[in-house]
Image (cartoon, rainbow, N blue to C red; front, side, top):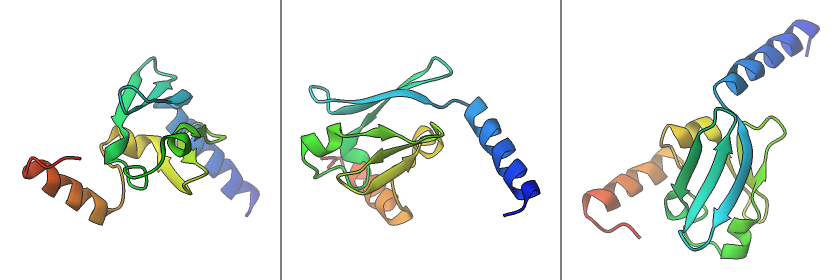
Length: 112
């Protein structure tokens, strides 16, 4: 990696962080939601059942959620699952195949 590559990567990360990065994240067991506080002041709540790799996971594994060093992602180390905060904000909770199945379940009223 050249110095120019490094500078470009840092500039890109700074730009992405300006759109909001995670300050806090936790699993709300009672509501079944992942809650993220963003630097923009927004609070984002997501149903963990919609997130690939979390729908059938044990609650203690979901509760072990961590913010990436850049604040642009979250990680569930016990589940080996990582998510981009921007993708989650855009409604992308997994792979294209996962999203297709999620849409099909919603269309048929069988969300679990």
